[in-house]
Length: 142
Image 1: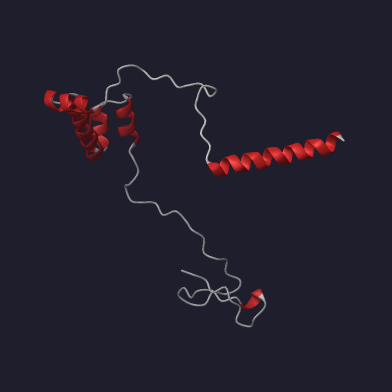
Image 2 (image 1 turned 180 degrees about the vertical axis):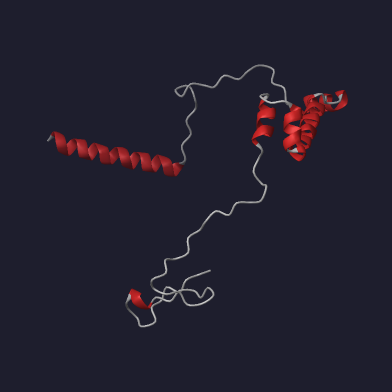
């Protein structure tokens, strides 16, 4: 919902139009504030959290909320099943064959041992900078 920020009379804030929300608001009514609306039964059960932490028994958590307990048992069973999964040998061999192998580790060269290549424009800019530096130093030493 967008507010119309243009003044109808061309000047003051007094005439600022607001969007119509079910009628005209009076000047004494404060603007409606956002408020939290609690959801029905949407909060996690404390006892289920304690059961997941190992502080309560499963039977006590089941008496309180069977849906959450069943959900977490299915999640735990699926996690254990996936933990026991192993990649088949042919797939593992294909993965390992696709990884490039290096015969010896390559050491990076030190900055003073690397070759330097300059383009023509970079050489011209460097020469002009050195010339300007020479002129500045020459004028200061006189």
